[in-house]
Amino acid sequence: MNKIDSISEFADYRDEAHLKYEVIRPVLLGKITTRDRAKELQLNERTLRKYLQHFRNNSYVGLLDQRHGPSEWKRQLSDAQKAHMILLRLAHSGFSLRELATIIGQEYKRTVDHKTVLSVLKQYEEFFAFSQSEEAVEHFLIRFRRYREYTPVVAGRYRIIELLEAGWKVSTVSEVMQVSRRLIYYWQRRFKAEGILGLYNKPPIRIHFEETVSPAELAFIFENIENNLRIGNYRIKMMLNGRGNIKGHDTIWKIIHLFRDVKKAEKKKRLKMPEEAPLEAVLPHEIWFCDIRYLVKYQGDWVYSIIFIDGYTRVMLAGEACLKQDLSHIIAVLQKALMQYGCPKQIVSDNGSVFKAHLLERAIDRLGIDWHNIEKGKPWQNLMESHFSIEYRLLDSYVKASVDLKDIQRQHRRFIEEYNISGHWHHKAYTEDGRIYYKSPRSILGSAKGEAFTSQDLSKTFAFRHYQRVVSRKGQIRILGYILYVDDGLVDETVDVYIYPDCLQIEHDRQVIVEYGCHYDIQTKQLKSVKSEVTFWHQSVSQQLSLFSMELYRIVVFTIIRRRFIISSQVKQLSFHFMESYLQNI
Image 1 (cartoon, rainbow, N blue to C red):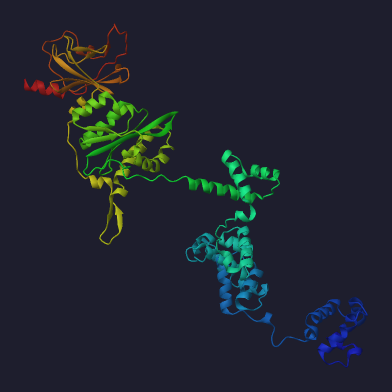
Image 2: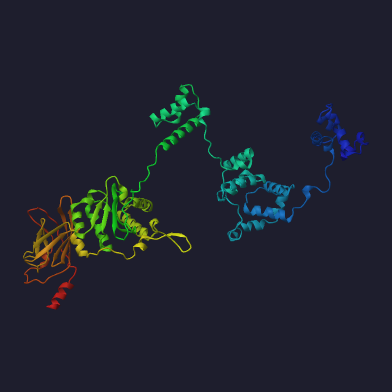
């Protein structure tokens, strides 16, 4: 007011508010403009406009000096305010100076200038630089919780509103809480419109069709959907528009959902009858269950899973992943289970042709096992049907990623091993303090076994064919079009020939003399091939010396009548200890 005081026209006014009023009074009365009044009194136009604004806002009181003591801007920040500012800066380095000033000002109900914030942060520049280094990471674990870390979810929404009310920017909240700005704006709008209740999830509101859609229109829509299940909401809307009824897309969608709900309610869930349960076993190895499942496709062909399971302990006794679901693989898996666990009293399977083969029935009858086929249309009688879901969850994801058949078979064996040692829902138990746990099938089975048979007896039982032949003077026999070498020391002796899926064994006096690799076709009942690899299990001593070496006869020879030829390779005799022990005893 020094410039105004120097003007003689206002020399008599000692009241500062009155003096300011007299300066702006001609402008208020409209006699002169603000710019001309400033030029007349040689004052700054901005100063004059400031007086006018104060007067118009608060009348005469606005012209009074409101300051009582030192300015609020010049007050120093307290230690608590500085500490709060430093913690915010440590937790997030993206705060701007003005944002920190706003947050501290709203928190402590005072005005803070951004320059003051800058001066405080400059004092701790080295400290902030050290906090960003790798050495200080394990010491400064200060961070804000992410939006997804809040439980319940409404707590995270409330935290967003709380930070916005504290002066945080939307961009800072989005970066700190790792949430999209769109979601922040959405909950901010919900909070402003509905308050704290707007942060909670709203239950879905079902439209009352009697208020917007007439029964005739509803029946028309239901009839069209019933006749054409593929019709969409756009087509229904067009049909209604053609009839003069204008309905929104949301209304049409809700009507379609209502139709689906009605159809679901009409489909009554079939109640499971009490008798719909597999045959129940009360002892281990009382009932076995078996089945074949399509596992995965390998090079265009299906790989099948064959598994035998015990009905009481739920132990998977034996299993195999193979490219064929033929009788030879069924017998191989069954023979493996019988050799390890003994014979059960009963085996349950479905009505597949492979389970009704005459050869299998004959072998099972010899072992005294009751093979039971379930009734058609009642798959629940076979326990393996329920175990297919376990195989689906624990095995399929691994074999689908396999590119090699050996890897698929390895994963199949691993699945059986892990299943047998894992807890099973059927074996529910309680600890001493009442906690629930589940025992593994392997622990329930223990060392229990069924009636045991020797491997030789099982091999004879499951042999596809059994023949008796007399050894010729050259130590050979003729079988199904093949001339096979046996032993030159068994001339004129009768030997037993057993044909299996993958090998042919020749026995004498219940001892295996020689074994050939072969392939026997079950469908045509023919010996398709005999491999030249031979294993000699026992050698007898020749009764007379031979002029030529017997190694010349130890090959696979085909008869000329059948016109079969094979490139024979010299056979390596694997074991000589039988001949050496025999010579020592002479």
